[in-house]
Amino acid sequence: MHPPSTVAEVADRGKRRPGEGSVSYEAARGRWRAMLSWRDDEGRLHRATKSAPSRSEAEMELAKLRLACPAPADGEEVAFGAWLDHWLATVLPGLRVSERTKADYERHARALAPLAATPLCSLGVRDVEALLADLAAKGYSRTTCRLVRATLSRVLGDAERTDLVTRNVAHAARLPADAAAPKERRTLSHEEAALLEQALSGERDEALWLSMLLLGLRPGEAAALAWGDVDLEAGVLHVVQARRWTPRGYEVGATKTRRSARVVRMPPRLAAAFCALERGGAPDDALVFPSRSGRLLEPSSMNQRLARLCARAGVDRVTSYELRHSAASLLSDAGVPIETLADLLGHTSTQMLEAVYRHRVRKVVDPGIW
Image 1 (tube, rainbow, N blue to C red):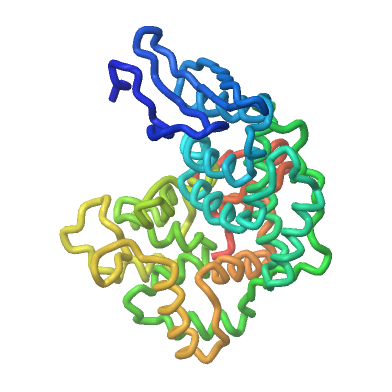
Image 2 (tube, one colour):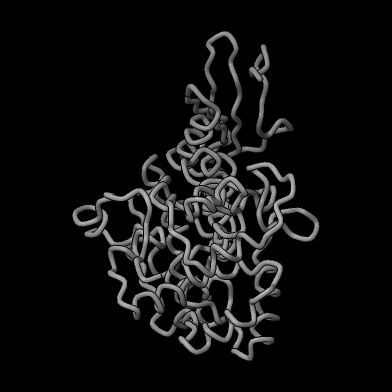
């Protein structure tokens, strides 16, 4: 949709108070304009304007004007909360990151609320460290504190890039030393894995759980398997999509990274479990493991069902993601080389493996122990 054909204010359409600004579109010039007005100590009205090719850039110019112009008569300064609101509304939607990452930024940005009233230019390292210390005191883990700091760093990074601040103080802020370490994921022992496999025999979604326990699929990858991804004749699974979070809820999308897309050999037990499934007339793009309502399985539902299976097997409860961790540990213990494990699990975190030693010379990843 094109902007209005006449000058139309998109911010602060009502009566403007001294020290407030607006962003408007000038049809004659085909440009967006940022304007700030204020009164000096003698009551004289002043205005400053900047033009930009887009609304987002004009809003950034308005933020710059607020910082560069003399303080308004009421002493108002640009607060961090105002910049954060602007960043969430206009900068975040344009970032080239996944919808899940955007949702994570929005969630962690809520923890920045105590900084909202702090003037943007006055925000210091001590303010950030005090916020992180308060989060740690409330029981948030070190990982959560790190993610909140990373979100703040991204927000302030754009402010620094556009000359709104001279330093990204989040970079210098240290995590609180007493922040709780993240809870370690549990790994099944060989004996526990055998008991769970036994309990899975004949289970409606036996192949779902075995794909994580034996091949280390991510829960979202297992939930998103479609019938066209299962090649029983060749005995392989094509891991090419995954469950992804979007503002609309969970949906099927691309794998975590491009390197996560892979083809893996199925062990006989898993292949037999897939053969036992009744496909009926389901098309290739239909989910193999839909929920009872026919929709994509969600994490909470998967973990609840897995908890019941663990109880039946007589083993301590594990989460669906801990099945993947168990697969990595058990296969490593069985002697599978780390390079093969990296391919099997769709890992990209080992830089040396990715950059130097890891070459896809085979189209099918086969641990070679079945």
